[in-house]
Length: 121
Picture 1: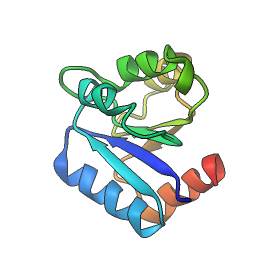
Picture 2: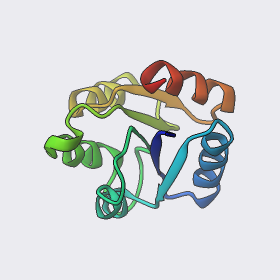
Picture 3: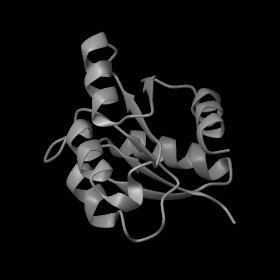
Picture 4: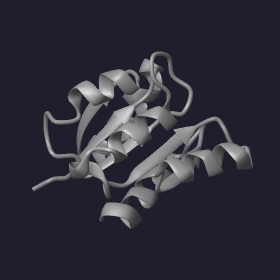
């Protein structure tokens, strides 16, 4: 059975690229346009991983991670930040909120899949 990954990004083109990359690698994908949208879809299917942007309207990636971590079902689900932000303090903020990993955009599809395979197989 294939694993399900949610990709959360306010940029439709980034969502499409991430989604395409993940589907090509054999994963099921659920897309969300921001943190609020992600939370509304989080219980549609059991998620194995969440890939989220940091800077989004309505609810940013840090708030999304805090909300996801407060749900017992997703307390230990890996969450990877995929963002243009690379400052140390942003990474620390993400890590303290519960992010598992951090990839800086623009990303290479092979790099994304490599990180995901390390995290969930």
